[in-house]
Amino acid sequence: MDLVVRGAALPDGRRGMDIGMRDGRIVAVETRLAATGREEIDAGGMLVSPPFVDAHFHMDATLSLGLPRLNRSGTLLEGIALWGELKPTLTQDAVVTRAMAYCDWAAAQGLLAIRSHVDVCDERLLAVDALLEVRRRVSPYIDLQLVAFPQDGVFRFPRAMELLRAALDRGVDVVGGIPHFERTMAEGARSVRALCELAAERGLRVDMHCDETDDPMSRHVETLAFETQRLGLQGRVVGSHLTSMHSMDNYYVSKLVPLMAEARLGVVANPLINISIQGRHDTYPRRRGMTRVPELVAAGLTVAFGHDCVMDPWYSLGTGDMLEVAQMGVHVAQMTGIEAMEACFDAVTCNAARLLGLEGYGIEPGCNADLVLLEARDKVEAIRTRAARLAVLRRGRVIARAPARHATLAIDGRPRTVDFLHPRG
Ligand code: FE2
Image (tube, rainbow, N blue to C red; front, top):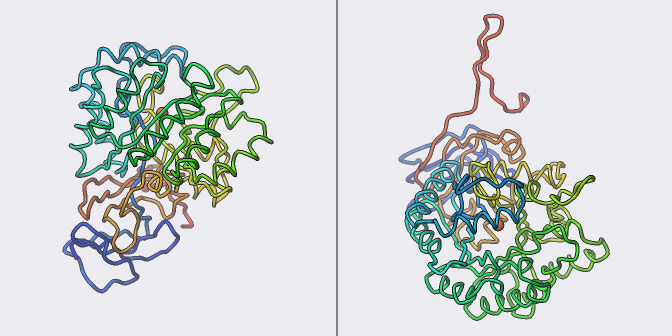
């Protein structure tokens, strides 16, 4: 074996497992593996997970915070206006440099697959070319999937459909959309239809910003589910955000959710951004705005969480830590039962991988040898402590290490080391 990790806890609850790797793939997962590795890592009972996956991000805007000014209201619409001011001043070098810096943050934290939207409402398609270059450069360590995203509306922005098609021709992977930003409800529905038809024609997946609003009557997800069925795209379409579902009438939702399940629609919530941006027009009580995650999970839909933004016109914080995203998801969705918290870990790992259609993802013989050793004994402890990534492996090679998280306490002349694991562990 090239590498053996011994004594690991796995996300499915198995403990004391050894993982053998050869030629970039996992070849054995068993207790007390007899074969030895040229290199061995003692997991010491800690959790070894497949890598984190971000199902929804904007890498063309990341780390641009403050350019050309800050978002004063903190609203989605000022963010879009601000991005519109920044766009003409972008250079390809600057976008690539910022995105590469973000990918360093990501890889160091075991985030090895990212689906990023890229704005195509730009005659130069500058961000598209920049992120295609970034996708090429990071491919040894990050799977970067790009979505052609018409930020200003595929019918609202002049020539956006042509630009979107051109982005796909250049190699962008997925068809995006933003129906709630088109001029009317009818135009939004027409955009969903046209974009799903385009995806079906080209054999591509779909991931739309859909109903990212507090308006309970914003119901493009219904059209998205319908078009998915009509065009035979089941399992290949994702509705991102779906925040209007938070505010919808309960009777209507009881009809909608089974239709979404029938279409095998994927769902991406973005807890950090949804809790920050939604409800901005409310007084009190103020709505949280995140979509109905526990109900969608219970209905059997695949639900993933995305980071969405890091230090950009919409959000000033973030480090690319998907455990921070999962932790916010736990709180905003009030998913505090043990199984519910475990589902929030799955939302930033295996569920996100499923929505991206990643191949070879998991901890089974034949899977890619991509792993993260966390300083936590299980998924819930990983979320609680935002566990250190003790080692990050890509194709069987250690690409990042970090020290365990601890402090040295000196009280009463008795120095002792404090970690944050459950003392009864
Ligand atoms: Fe987004």
